[in-house]
Image (cartoon, rainbow, N blue to C red; front, side, top):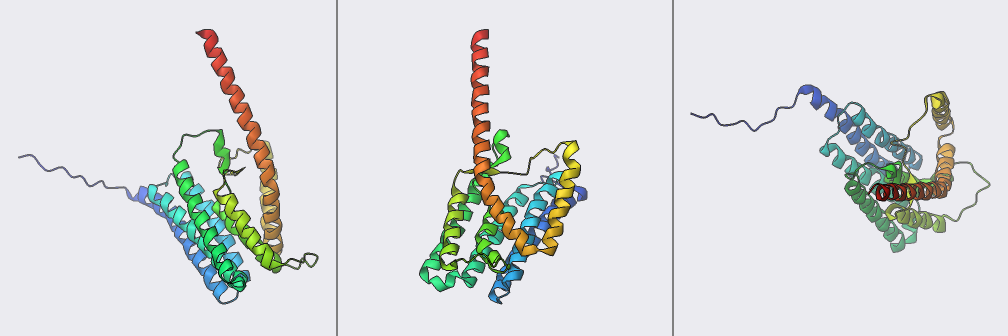
Length: 267
């Protein structure tokens, strides 16, 4: 008598561990993102900012760790997107609403809704495009990534908790402006640098390590000043990334045309 086939696939404990570790980091990011909302409810906006920054650091680590230990999975990919939605979509919107946008009435709430919707659309597009074949375009994001967007909309709040006395801002205008601009950047096709596949030459490794140590050292000493300056520098880098993208695009088109001409000569 033929024995029934066992369709259950047993996964080794080693592979289970590789998948669970990055997913645990992702879930920690969810908890930190939700906790930032709690800090904002209590009026502890400095702690709310720090929580979002920690969530961004974890978001940058979980995927790299998953690829490093070969623990990537479809569940991890979807979980990462849901975490980004909470930590860099919902949480920053609530933080800024409790801080300033609630004084603008219905318009303030509308701005929050627009931003969260744009984050959702941006993440959905990213999940679809991530299944495409690798190319030179992988060095760029299509639009601003959600972690950067979450920090950008917090920039007015971050500036307010620093002692940049020379900056006098009308936050009732600045905050909605940052929200609208960031929302448009999220859903746009504006190219922004992606550091996921950056290649560092061995000679430059020591300078990279020095820069990382210096950055985090300054971040520990002057946290809000460093974050505010980094946000402004990121905005200034966007035109540079656009020019670089167009240059690479032109080179790729010229290379394809040259290959086609060579093929015609052979035929």
